Amino acid sequence: DIHILHESDDLIVLSKPAGQVCYHTKKTSAGKISAKRKKAKKGAAPDDDGTKVDISLEDSLIDMNFVLSTVNPVARGIVHRLDRGTSGCICLAKSNEAHMKLIASFFLRRVKKKYLALVPSPSTSSLEQEGVIDALVGGKSAASKYRVVSTYRDESSSQGLTLLEVETLTGRKHQVRVHCTEIGCPIIFDPLYSSFQPPAQASRRKAKKDFQRNKRGKADNTEDPNQSSFPKAISDLETTMIPGQEKFFLHAQSLSISEFDVDVQAPLPGWWTETLDQLES
Image (cartoon, rainbow, N blue to C red; front, side, top):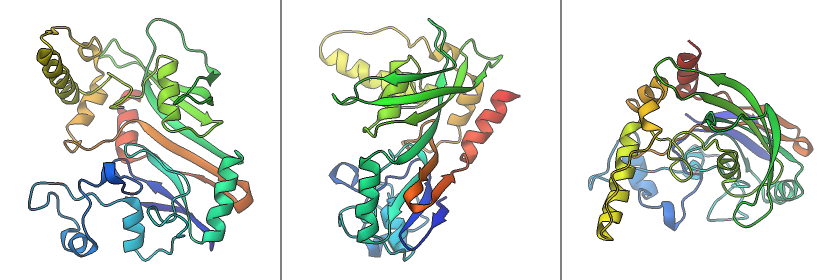
């Protein structure tokens, strides 16, 4: 599922699949396995003890014998990152010299990044066709530009959906996810910032909240208003999702780095296009 979009002596730009972590840290190492066991388990689902094999993007590229920079030995080649649940364009450095130049390009905001996000249409107020979102992310200033690409109405639901194009003007962690929430449009399936979840995920989320509330002696019999109007196109998608796999409707659509002659677009994943086709029909 990893597609090469651009490659040179300095770098490689890939389309990362949703559900794959860029590199392993202590927080993401639950399914990490050694190189020897990884080779034996390649293509297998769970491990002997029931844990899932979790091969990072970094590990995958090393397995395929790609040369990656060693500026950061914990995350070889990684210049910037995408969240596990996000798909699309990501750039990795091949040499240490290119790595440092790329870091400077990102820091000086010479890199242009655009994302696509599928979100619930806001019900309380109309959303301007385009605008700038200027809101703190993680306590730091952050700015993004957005544009409405399409709106959808599903006959099976009273809840409309909107496809947004978001260009980040700064590079904060979770910036697009937080900014979409700021304008009342949390990204569908986002486990951190959105209550707009498919029924099974919503049930697990509510069960966890109920358990925590019951421990405090407080009952919660309320229902998420979104669930009664969940669009069929989104509900249908849940049947194809691997339980526990994190993926949400955020796609790094394009990446432009003029200093390295990079100007690429990542095609939408199949599960994205199938959902959008169903919404359009």
